[in-house]
Length: 446
Image (cartoon, rainbow, N blue to C red; front, top):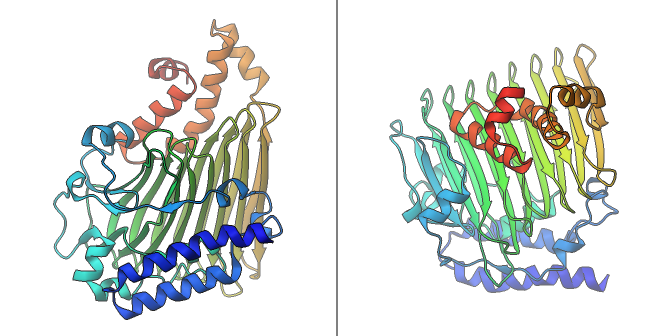
């Protein structure tokens, strides 16, 4: 109990130093932060006794006395280009340790009325657009890390799309974590508001420079107006010494379409929460995910889709590849409420274990309170198919290359669904490099 209090006190003391420095913020924002830190003080960090965290021990994270990251970390354009995945022509906002870096950012042509800016700038220039939605969907009542993020809310990305407009080029949000010689934490807060019948592609990239010990605690709120379409990609490629906890909260209106691709490659400990509230008739929600882990990495994916209205569909496919002593967690929940008749929902989790010491805890779940629905869910866990390995070996392919090709084919079922071609190619190259294969070998054999 004393250790838990000490771990919590690190952040409470940091807040006592942080809040006076934000004396110029609006009273409503300061009240929001104060309420959030009070909530965190009341509940503290989750333990293995908490049902939602029972497979994810947090001691390695909570025992590190992270200091709050401050502005000033130097990142060159060359280092950024090497670390960040290429998304082709796009509008790019870059944040270093949670702070906006205008010298590394650039905007393409945007439709009239569209806003792509740092959250701090938007709070100053467009307060009505921000305050109508900020912290209205992702609160910290049931999630201590969200409460902690809100308590230190300072900057992040703000995207507002006007009704009826389509942004043709992707919007790329790049979050760089770097802190040589010092363990630091940052709390990026992102707010995405898509007006009625708008359309856009959004990429969140989280990257690390070097083997720094960093903690990224991110929250992204996404609000889709009636008929809006958003393709959302979250790519986590931080260092193997990094900790990453992220929550994406989606609010859908009538006939909107949300497509998510969560891709996790880095981090010592990663926890991704994606929650979608399907709040209007005729909505579509797609959640796809791929996670690769080796060594002693731990990747935890929690998803929740709330079907609250009738005539909606959701499709979910998460795949994991675990090697070494890596551990994965998949907890997927689909709730079909009483009024959500004619719901069509499908959930699948497939995991490939490449070693005898890798472990996956998978829990696909359905809770259905309507009687006219079509819902399925399932999970498979296995190793590489020996017959497929034999077939490749019989064609003169070595054992190592054959295993790598089958692993690539398994993962490419998700990566192949990425619609941004430059991003998809870079992801494929990263996957091939991780398995020790050149692109030509995979293209010839798959």
